[in-house]
Image 1 (tube, rainbow, N blue to C red):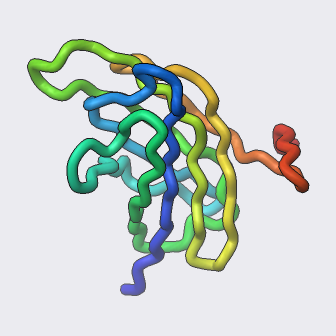
Image 2 (image 1 turned 180 degrees about the vertical axis):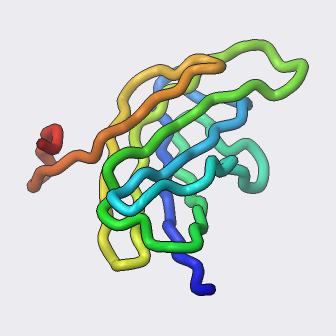
Length: 129
C-alpha cells in the first residue's frame, strides 16, 4: 500500500514566552478524508520562541484538497501550563502543492484549534472562501 507523505512547517511567534514544552498534535482534513492525530515531535524543544520546524504526517491515502489543519495542545506531565503562540502551518502535499494555514494566536493547554487555508499573493493573505 502506497503511503502519502505531507511535510509540515510549523512556525512559532517570536514574542517573549511564545514557545511551549507541551505536546502539539495535528490532524489534516481534506476532501477525501482525514489523517490520524499525529504528535509533532522532533529532537529537543520543538516549539521554541521564533522557531520553524519541519515534520512529516503519513497517511495511507491522499487526503485530496486540504481544507483544515486541526491542532491540539496537550500537557507534558509535571510541567506548568504555558500558552503557545502559533504563527502558521505550511503543508507541502504529495501532489506538489503548498498550502498555508495562518494561525496568529495563542493556544492554551487542552485547547483545539482548526485552521482554514489562506489564499493571496504578493505577501497579502486573505481567508479562503
